[in-house]
Length: 182
Image (cartoon, rainbow, N blue to C red; front, side):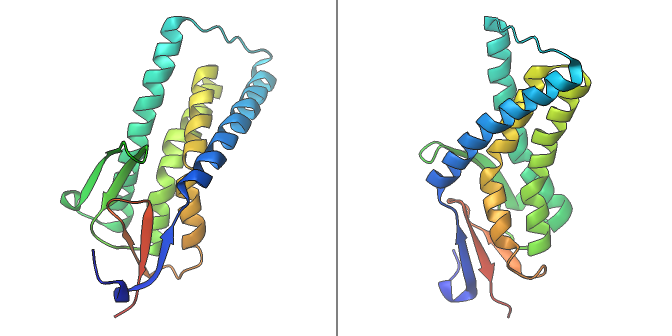
């Protein structure tokens, strides 16, 4: 990692706080999502078999993987970062999935890359669930929206900085470095 003198600021999120916010958002968005579903469809039929439970678990895992892939796509599309400078994985010790790049991005690009998964793995599946009348997809979308709580926490902090300041992602911790201009 670079010398600390090169940093204007360090943005670090409190994972315990984010986990509680995410849990609360999961409950609220699930309830609101199903209420909206009931309003739109007239009724809700939630019958879960073991197969349904299994499919929800698989769907949730796949959407989490896609969430991180969309961060990588955001780095590429908005930050013009080469694929070779990116990586993703799961940090079992911290209990988080991650996507990172070794190349600093302009703030405006980092903010877009942070929120792309929210739209693609949260809002879009929820919207599709309403259209095709599939409440399980509405729930999965709600859970992935809530799962973006850490991304929103970082986005909120990045709003304090100019759009062209460079942001460096920490490869290990949920931390961003705001770089000084040379």
